[in-house]
Length: 71
View 1 (spheres, rainbow, N blue to C red):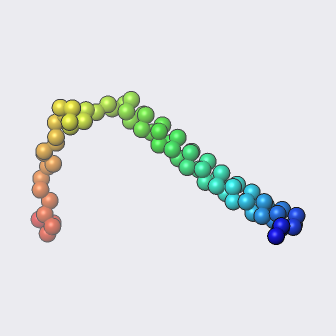
View 2 (view 1 turned 120 degrees about the horizontal axis):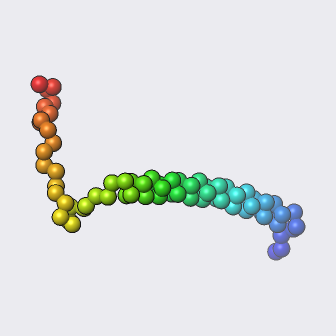
View 3 (view 1 turned 90 degrees about the horizontal axis):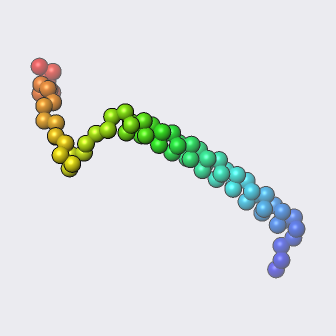
């Protein structure tokens, strides 16, 4: 059974609204990713660090030991 033009139009309008919502969500995600990339690029440029498996030292001195009782 074929659907009427009115039903087809209604379905397409609903699909358009869903697509527009998805586009907005994707744009927001894209913007967040761009921001994260910028921040990480700045961190990498400002303070390049050696990873532990490339010969970097593992920190072992964490200061005084904290106690649960607050002593």
